Length: 261
Image (cartoon, rainbow, N blue to C red; front, side, top):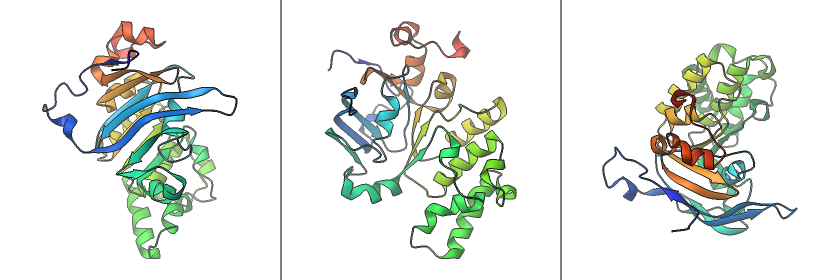
């Protein structure tokens, strides 16, 4: 075991064979440096079972966003490899990867770019071989499930921050990805919409990966937590065990969730 990593039981309340579940995502010895030679990812190895929910936490600059931006091919591995559903992430496989992985950006305005909400949700589907009626049915179903159907003709710029956040999720959920990656999903939500988002996330069967400084949200939605520090995974284990370990969190420039303070 690498000497920088702390590992605790990932699923203490689960059957003992849970770690033998088929791995959907496999990251092997991944490293990545920016053009200025800053090493953002340093020899990371992770395996995520299908249907699991993992939180990636750490101080600013730890490499969290760089790591998850590899999962949809925004960055390609410079060293090591990533496979999703047995498909290696390479330039030639990006079309397949984009169908499997949905990324919810930190800023919803980066995800909503048309003049009408309906068109934003339909955009991804229109690039698939689907009939207009099938597209309409999926868009309507998704917007109704998120209580956004009545807003379908509104410009996204006229939506509230909470509405924008759920609209950004709709652009991903309508595509039915196997993996949903979320970058700071609660950064602009009031308490009511935050609770609504928790309920939504916990209802999804997809494999979920959340990057967030909101450790209470991670507590409520994730089974497993990885702490990143200086491009490494410094701890990996059960969300409840990791997030209640004050000494471990402070060693990684983090604090206990508010519920434990």
